[in-house]
Amino acid sequence: MGKTLTEKILSEKSGVDAQASDIVIAPVDLAFVQDTTGPLTIRQFQESGRSKLASPQQSVIFLDHAIPSPNRQLSNDHQSLRSFAKETGCLIFEGGNGICHQLVAEAFANSGDIIVGADSHTVTAGALGAFATGMGSSDIAIALALGKTWFRVPESFKITISGRFQKGVCAKDLALYLIGMLGADGATYKALEFGGEAANNMTMSQRLTIANMAVEAGAKVGLFPSDNITRKYLAAQGRGNKYKALYPDINANYEQTIAINADELEPMIAMPHTVDNVAPARTLAGTKVHQVFIGTCTNGRLEDLATATAILKNKKCNPHVRLIIAPASRQVLTAAIKAGYIQTLVTAGAILLPPGCAACLGLHQGVLGDNEVCLSTANRNFKGRMGNPEASIYLASPATAAASAITGEITDPRKVI
Amino acid sequence: MPDMILKGKALKFGDNISTDLITPGRYAHLRSNLSELAKHTMEDADPTFVDKVRPGDFIIAGKNFGLGSSREHAPLVIKMTGISAILAKSVARIFFRNSINQGLPILICDTDKIDSGDEIKVNLTKGVITNSTSGIQLTFGKLPQVMLDILSEGGLIPYINKYGDFKL
Ligand code: SF4
Image (cartoon, each protein chain N blue to C red):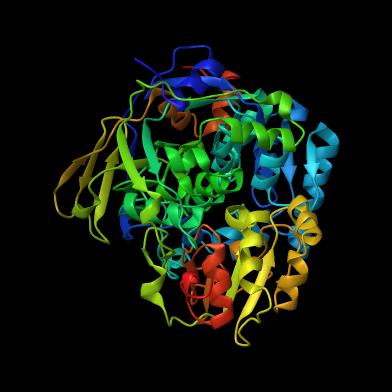
């Protein structure tokens, strides 16, 4: 029997012939925390009586969720994370460098790697063919200490995407459509493995958006094969030597096969308060929005800002809308400055925030008021997510977000492009 | 060894209780002050939860309990409020593993057969849940051995402290 991508990576790393439902122990190539899960991870690490990391150069702390810090408690958490980095020699990315998942893609993830992070969207690196999955603080503490962890090998769903995206339709629309189809728990504990013509043609930015949202259907990983696009991306990031081709076997065993035709997709929205509560954007026309947020590990990349810029060029945001833009990383921000996107977006009325999670999780930088509506390019719209359980969050692509920022209501971007 | 028995009252919730409802992101500044953080447990799902819960009580949930973020603070604060186990129709992957790693039993069963306020008894060893109020008995799925071992040591950290490594 052939192997899925998941089985291939876990077999190679664990040194045993791993099949779905087996339990294996495997070394990790990277273990990381961010600033809101890091302090508990350090506490657990210390409670395990350890002081040394298995591999400091494969252990990373990212300060991204609460930067610049909104209050003294989080500032103190940042201090203790910095001290831990100093004591153990692990790597630390200071605030302003970007969101952990974007930085993992830019600087660390290689095809065939195993990556574990104390953040659920660790799945993002699946775009590069890395078996990347989110875990809690105890698991990461032990991965940092031992350099390995245990996995149950998940069964895989094959998601075959044919055709190509039509004008105004983004990778995000596919992600929302797929989650709507599977349901928020439809892929619980499974691996999603993407393939097909549209998947093969997707840019790395699009793949990252889709892999990022695999967890919103409950999946453990969202994997793309490692191909020529992966090779080019790694080369552009200075890791061309790390590339290796990686595909599932043709006769691999999938628990389910799902076919999606990209030609038929249209701009989608996830309505409050679950990500699987989806509808075409056109059916929600007229829904007033108070805040539009373009950014996050889902849609804060250069291509996303380019999409928004193309729509907002020579236009103005609706005076009743606060448009917030937070690039996913310093690399994205500097490239966006160079390309003139930031000039256009800020002129159109956008508030520019530093690279980081920004308004995504309700800590600061865009907390919603009672009964307010936000249209966001993030991956979650749970009640209370943006700091106020009395507010509503709708999720959409950067194109739909930019179009809606102009009109002040949910707008199918095909109406304005 | 005597059977491991848990006893308490049912506190019922619906489907899709996210980690944002269990321990909202707006309290992230309290994450290094766990006793303060625990005062807000389940706040956005039921603001009266912390006042109602008594040691030994059970959270009874629908499907996909604990979806969302990887914050292990979620099962941690639930345990701190005195909850002895979570019973749900299904559980999100990371929350499931985190709960076991915190030594908090999480059992998959048909929770439609349990109402709020029912007196529940769980025999962890035999795998049987008894609803003493209705007289109905339920069973729950067995955990993989590695998880059972972690749970019986009270969590992942005590497990590693004892064995020094994973043992399969
Ligand atoms: S951008 Fe949002 S979803 Fe992504 S890591 Fe940050 S808080 Fe999490």
